[in-house]
Length: 211
Image (cartoon, rainbow, N blue to C red; front, side, top):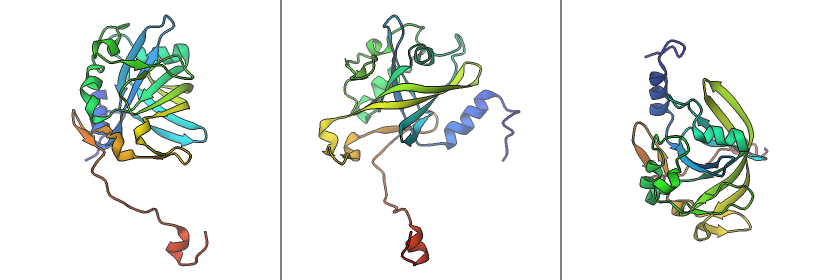
């Protein structure tokens, strides 16, 4: 089956992407506007893009009623945001922050969430999340009417103490983070069903013993 992306409606394009590009990590983004009002929302069009410097990208779609979502508007206005990752025990609260609440509402308060102060940026991080990235915007690529890809540089990493095995070598107990990811529709997946697959090397592949 083939769909011409230039000829299908946006909901069809979204379904084709969301149903096939999975699992997708969830960026639980906290931003702050110039008046200090907080906003929180989850985004699953998200991933790591590089480590030198540490870089992430978040795809933020438009709001049918008001154009740019508060997350995008706040990042464009201040350049700062915090990405927390979502453990299974916080999925219900995460889902509440996905409410289509009116602009200016504090989804953290609606979801009954507490925050912790960040170290390098103004927006706080979500208490209870085992991982948080303090970020500043590197660039924003507007890809459609009020749709943007925010590219951010991570300036600070927070990882729960009980999930750090070796601070000097940054060995993390990843299974203990208990993170979830987005799948198709309203389906989510856990990060517990894993298997090992070593990356091949050219030396072993060719049997020459050199890289």
